[in-house]
Image (cartoon, rainbow, N blue to C red; front, side, top):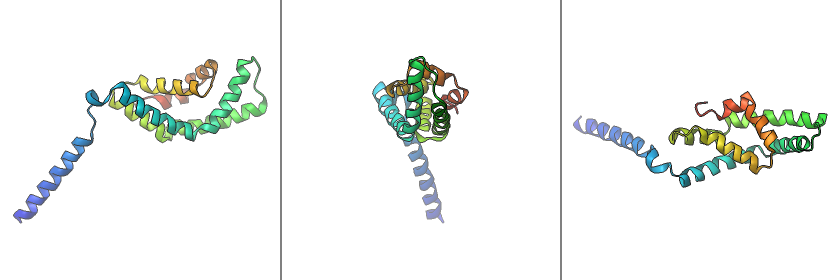
Length: 146
């Protein structure tokens, strides 16, 4: 009986200590290098899952930059692209990783900065980025507590 109680206490202690050891200390891990590596990995996940959506956004963006109105088919593709992108930005692993990173380092602006840089890297115009950033669905997606 004593052995069983001792084993139970040791098992519970080991589990508790393992849980404490796996929680990162923000003061030690939230360096710009650490954040940059994890942010890049999260953005890579988003990029991989949303490449076709981004092509449609880029095409519409190019039309607007030229001062043209996008064609009906471009707008249809844009509609489908926003639906796909919405799914990635609400349920995708990349955005979940960015939220975790933002919470860990207590930096709510981290998500919006990473996503803004990502859209620029994809070749979206500032006008298209501003349009996307104003969308309620985008604001909800990048909210750190979403």
